[in-house]
Image (cartoon, rainbow over all chains, first blue to last red; front, side):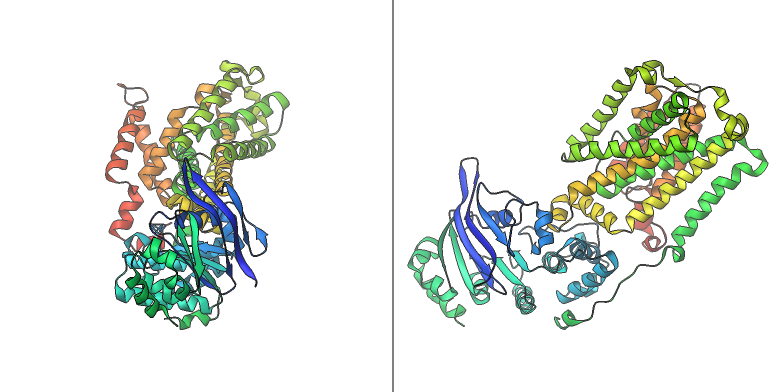
Length: 252
Length: 336
């Protein structure tokens, strides 16, 4: 198996709190790996450790054959790993087009400005923001900002995309649109590591799922394996009936 | 919605500079600076415009940090003062010609700024602002105790220094035109940075540094480069300004008041805008000239600039250009 991202023995503490503890998993080429777990399980911290916002206390992050452990986020971005934020982080006074251009200019391909602008236009269209190119990011709706996060990350032409709750706060129509976009991203050959609380969505999207609980890996497997795993049902879902329902929804 | 994904990528080039109205507006301004005092040999106007050119230079370069990258630099005047000291020293002690001394001063100050920048730009927000004013105070204290540069008494240039430029009267004109050239270069630099990938990176930093870094903007390097770049032309302006005075002392060279005035100008005109820095500087110079002739207060303009800064920050944070863009959004296509 050719792993694009390999996380090995990752640990991180904040003060006395062990946010992530001895976590290992891998994301293969073109794979969608779901990362789930209750609030405070350490999911976003894992993202921050992978893309270099924090340097881990222990462990290694290998990406595309290189050790990127503790590299600054801008180096990780350039290596081809892009991410979105759980709490949207637009560049508020810059337009949608400019926001995306930043992604293209400083991402994996490090495009010159003119080419970056063309890529920006293309990804903005891809996520459905083609009518808002000249709109300052601050003026977008929350759904618009979420799509902008995604477009900006895509503009970097990443090999791996980390999606942190891109569906949170969206209405059902918007969620359906976003899911279509995410699926077509994978069709473009981009691997995806996704954090999501919306069970039905993540069970349907993911090839495999890793379950985190209190910073530790509780389980790993296909969506149906996860839904049937007694430990997961016990610790996370808490409700066998709900698990059965999800299993039905997530079956291929 | 996802069919566009396969579309061929073509270049998306901006309008070339010569076809932008902004370029011609700036060219006209520079032409006016050159021509106006020549009409009737108006020395008084020349002196007023010379100060305006210095203000525009300081404000435009400060704008690279304050307007684009969003970093408050309280000590921008240190570049001006150090540039003055280095070139005056090279001319007086080592008999360097003006051009060589200017160039050396510009390069030395930029390099020094790069070193400072790599150090202090790890700081953010208020801590960075404090560090910049600390640098200015530190350099001033150093120079005031540095005997080769005359300590607190400063350095003088003999009047014979103007001989190579054709005597004092002609030298003042030459210096004026050189300062206008430095001003023009500052405006062009602001424009070139703003329309470049580097400038986009700086503006991303100014908007949200954490997000910019995650998007791949190498913020520590970019900030240090901007800080260093914003030092070069003010150092040249300082060199010319103090060459003209034929005298430099620490209190004049590292006057924090001038730093503050540069910030007021950027905020008055509208931070991040090139036109704003230019108009703000011109307006401020006019206001200052008016207030200086008041007999009641000396340095009354500093009182006014303090109040002005407060009013702008509280009520018109976008400054003059922000207000204009708000009323006439189409002006964004015309001005920068």
